[in-house]
Amino acid sequence: MILDIINKKANNYELTKEELETIFMGYLNDEVKDYQMSAFLMAVCINDMSDSEVFALTDIFIRSGDILDLNFIDGVKVDKHSTGGVGDKTTLIIAPLVASLGVPVIKMSGRGLGYTGGTIDKLESILGFRTALSLEEIKKQASDIGIVVTSQTKDLAPLDKKVYALRDVTATTNSIPLIASSIMSKKIAGGADKIVIDIKVGDGALVNTEEDAKRLESLLIKIGSYYQKEVRTVISNMDRPLGNSVGNRLEVLEAIDVLKGNGKGELLDLSLTLASKMVSMGKGISEEEALNLVKENLNNGKALNKFLEFVKYQGGEIEKLEIDSKVYNIKANKSGILKNIDALGVAKLSLSLGAGRTNKDDDIDYNAGVVIRKEIGDEINEGDILASLYTNIEDPKFNLEKVFEIS
Image 1 (cartoon, rainbow, N blue to C red):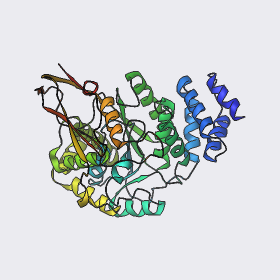
Image 2: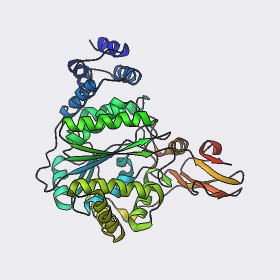
Image 3: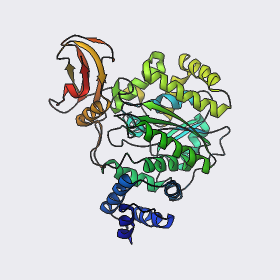
Image 4: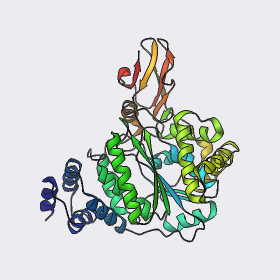
């Protein structure tokens, strides 16, 4: 039966909900093996899925576990999701910023997927920070401080969690239907009333073309409508890294710097845009009004204070946040103008330093990563430091020309 379903999708036939249930629930229950699910996921990547298959799969993911009821919390609960990008630490900035304005944020986040980092990995780089919260803990924290960021519990969308880990190591991360079902099942099971989704598009994203981004956007909105959830989207560029730091602990430090009022460029702009959409939806006001409120709380320190309160509540020792690794500098081999910083190249470099996973059970070096020292458009002199590499690997290898374009 399982082989028949794999063959059917491999030959580009539409599957019924019952067939999808058979293979996916079989995988959750260990009746379908990793190699069988890998073959099926690759067939999906090659042959795509119809909208009806995507709706069915999302429902299967949702109903594989519990659905969190957040009605005990007053106000509109707004969630945010990013499809993954290089250096994307916006959740660390946005969640406390939005919560500081009285809009509850209860967010389930993931670990690193492919070359992109995961919010849970970043938070776990803070000594003592707990990401595996029970439903009762989530409810209590949400009531007490209005902000929770947790990994998927074993009871919420457990099927997605298991499939997500397999996709990470089988080159099946960039399927639009799988991305859509994964995102929306977590958001709906997590109990959010309204959802903002940042769709990354470019060389450093799971979605590489504008066409695919538009299709994903359409699917996400359709799924949201089916479950009576308002979905707003932003399509943002991921041809270059977001911010200057790539790597778990390094990104936490950069997020704190933004919350201190030192943000600039695309990272700040995107954070303000996403936070404004969330506050607009949560308070029922225009995005322009929301933007003014967001800027005010970023500048007056309330967002930073909410971040510190949130980290402490989940056991994190922010005062012990420091980088403990060797530092190697990448220096320019010629003079000119810095034309481009390749996001995928930086992601691969960060992965090679120990900041990500090549196998689903790999450990991460939380100190590892890359800090970019120059901006696109800067005038570069031969010998200038372009980036600093943080790693415990001796004499790390890198290809300067694959990351930095100088002409």
